[in-house]
Image (cartoon, rainbow, N blue to C red; front, top):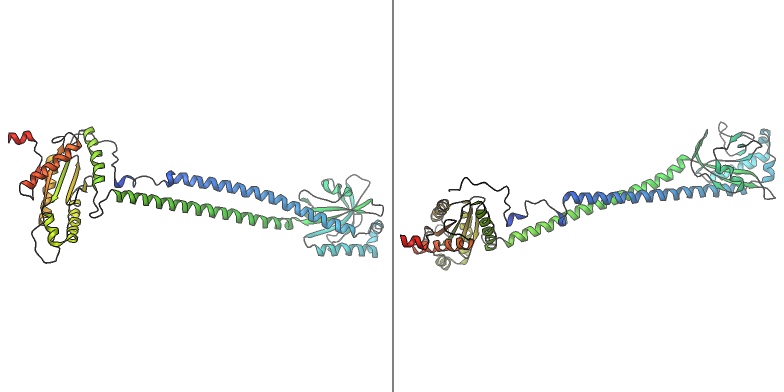
Length: 427
C-alpha cells in the first residue's frame, strides 16, 4: 500500500470516536485522582483536628470531674473529724493515744471506701511562712507514714494554702518525695466555725492517667471510625464514579458502533471523515476512501434467510477489519455497504488494499450449511482519493460511490477507481 512521504507529521492527532475517552486520565466527576485523594486527606485533617479539639475539651472536663471528686471526698472526710479532739494532738507521743488511733481509723475507712485515693491526712499551719505540720495520716506503711509534727513546705502548692478558706483542689499534678499526685483539700472547722486544720486527699498520677487513657482510647476509636468512613467513602465515590464513567464510555461506544457487525457505524464514519479530511488538507496528505457493496446480497438473503445474511455480514466485516491498518477505519455504511477510510494513502495504495480484500472474500466459504456448495460471495469496490479525485469530503464520498457504481456496471466482483467526466471524454 503506497503512502505519501516527505510530509511533516503533526505533533499529536486526537482522533474522535470510540477511543476518545479511553486514553484520558480517569477523573471522577471532573476531579483528578490526585485531587480526590487530596480532598480526602483534607477531610481527614479536619476530622483529626475536630477529634483533637474534642479530646482536649473532654480531657479538661475529666480533670475537672476528678478535682470535684477530690474536693467532695476531702469535704466529706473533714466533716467526720472532731476539731476539738484534733487540737489535742500536739506531739508525736500523742500517736499512742486512743484519740489518735480512733481518728486515724476514721481516715483509713474513708480511704478504703475510695480506692482511687492513695493518701489521706490532716495538716496545720505554723508560725513560719509556708511551713505546715502533719497531724493525722491514714498511711499504714511505717516507712511512708507522716507523724505528728513532721514539717512540709507548701510554697509550691498554692491551692493547699487556700484550703483554710474553703474546699479546693490542685489545678495540676504535683510531685514530692512520695510521688506525683493530684490533691484535694478541705478545712476542718471547730465549734466556732473557725478553720483549725486542713484535710488533704491525694490521687496518684497513675489513677488520673488511667482515666485519661480511657478517654484517649475513645478518642482514638472515634478517629479510626472517621478514618474508616473517609476511606470507605473515597473508595465508594471513586468506584461509583468510575462505573459511571465506564457506563458513559460504553454508551458512547455503542452510539458509534454497528450492533450487528461491531464495526463503526455511519455516525462514527462521518466524524472520522470530517477529522481526517481536515488533517489531510492541512498537512497536504492524501486521503482515500473505499466503498464496497456485496454482490447479489438480496438473492443470498432470499435463498438462505435473513439470519444467514446477518452471519454473512458479520463474517465479511471481520475479514475486512483484519485486512486494514490500525489507523484505518472500517464502517458499515448501509445494509450491505461498507466503507474504508485510509489516512495518508494514495489511490494506488487504496486500489491495492481493495483488491486484496476482494480476493480474500472471493475465496472465502460463506456457506450457511456445512458441506453445501453455493455460488461464491463476492464484493465490488469503488475508490476515490483526495486531492486527486475530490476537493471536499462530500465529493470524496460521492466519487467513491460513483466508482462503486462503475464496478457494478462493469460486471461486479471488481475494483474501480473514480474517473471524472473529463477523463471519460478523453478515453
